[in-house]
Length: 273
Length: 222
Image (cartoon, rainbow over all chains, first blue to last red; front, top):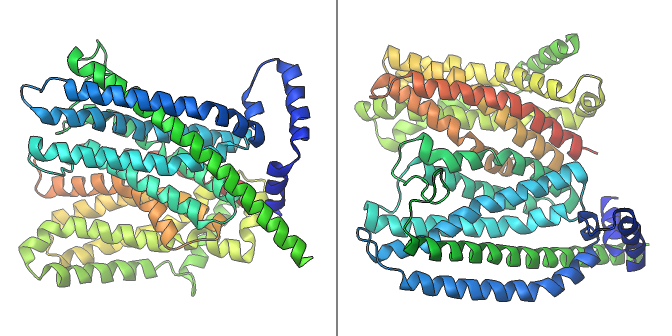
């Protein structure tokens, strides 16, 4: 009767949670992750935060795009260097999202945090989209620069594997009807897949490949010129905020979807009785 | 220890008897290898060049095919629940099951490789190199595949989902397995470098596989 547990989790009168949260507030005196475990509280909090986040994202992306458009052409790459302002944030986020999902997986397996599996499930399609964009923009840049859309070098291959693993994870979520059962399986797969992250990060250092080595986050400071670094950082922050916004919105949708599901199941069981 | 030995013995015995289906992997390996010349044409020089890749792909698919049996049969007759509840640590039991599965389904693939190498016009040294890389690499395929098998059995889904989950994890093994074989046959690279990475991958999966599979069994079965 897993679904009944789920239904009770999410449909308890808000009074119960207020008491529970008040108890934890008294105990610790600060807002903790436990408070966010109450889906209703999470929904009201995110409803308040989301418009501001969306506005900040829009402003940063507009500023970043303007700066990218105004940035000077590279002396070797010409105007194609501007693809980098889109490509690099997407590539960073493709790994960051898996990292977020790994944390959520720990939350599911270790702390049994009720929102952890919602977070993990909501992040997967967004991460897959960022990874896909990173691959597409990379190959669009590769065509004029390397003379080929695709090259089987270490970093491209490992990002492609990351993309396949995102798709496999989404398939796993979709294959199982019961969300809590799917959550635990997906959490284990996410943690196993996290091994790929350091491989992607260091592939350009370990193997001598076509893809350039790190030039921003490296020992001894970035090698990038300021004219390129500023728009890149603005775009990176803008895309990260975009992820946070989309993620919170997707989590809200997922919570509401689960509520609808448990209501439907309750209704069905009442009709059967 | 005797419990683990008994588990290994039991699994091998079941796999090799009628209905176990371990050796059907070898038959599948043979069939896939025979299909390749039909697809790329009977050009012996080309086949010799593609040989290691064909053998590795065949072995990968064959080991994937038999993975389904790793936990499902035990789940169906209830012995998996006994294994989960027993006093032997589940991680060790998973490792023992994977070892038994490799002995029954993975090792025959390695043994069959020389015969299949003949079909693909590989000379003695090349066949030996491919068989050696398969010997070092197939444990990694089994032990990472075990994670997918454990997930699939707890979700009551096998088949395509298992393949979709396991295949991305086995790509590094494929890359370094084929790279080592090619290096031994023609490559400018020395055989030792990719081969040691292949061995490292096997050792890593030997550690991670049992823990992940045991975790998924513990969390997933009810």
